[in-house]
Structure formats: structure tokens, C-alpha cells
Length: 113
Image (cartoon, rainbow, N blue to C red; front, side):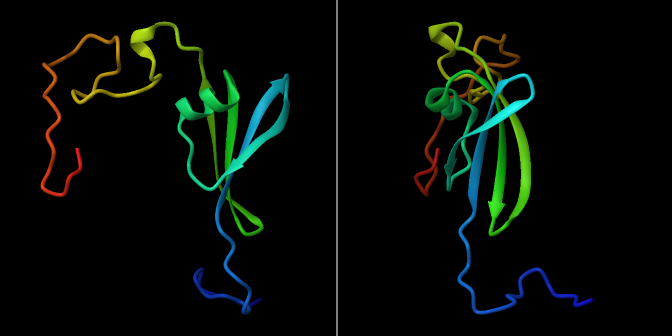
């Protein structure tokens, strides 16, 4: 058995770009591929692009699945919660009672919020 470091290439093959495979639960235990993206999608993006439902995300690198996760996308119930699952500057979710007053976002020297 040959043992190799994880970063050693076996041949001169080109590096495969990672891709996220998006599977949507259609009915019962049936999953169908909804799409693929090179970026890690958010729950809000999944809901806006593919609709409400249950999703499984698989990170594929070459011919291997290196990571899998589930996501549950629910319908937005009010205009104030337009970004489902978002977290405010105070660390609370929209609509939840604030444990402390929210601090305004300030710009850093690098321009990040």
C-alpha cells in the first residue's frame, strides 16, 4: 500500500476546481440535483434561487465528496425578517428581543465593516 501526503499529486493531471452540488428533497426520501455552484451558498440564496424546502449540500473536489451538510429553507413570514437567519450587529436574530443595545457598524481602516 502506498502512503502519500494529502497535498502530493499522483500525476501531472490538472487540479480540479471544488464545486458544491445542491440536492433538493422532492418527496419522501427522494433527492434530486437542483444545481451546482463554485461558491458556498447561504440559506437565503438557496431559498431565493430554488425555493422553500430541504437541501443537502455536497462539497466535491475531483472525484471525492469531502463535506456534506443539510439546510432547511423556510418561507419568510414578514417583511421585517426579509433575510431569514440573519444576525444583526448585536448578535441577535431579527425579531428576537435584544439582550443589549445594538452598536452601529463602523468601518475599519481596511474598509471592512
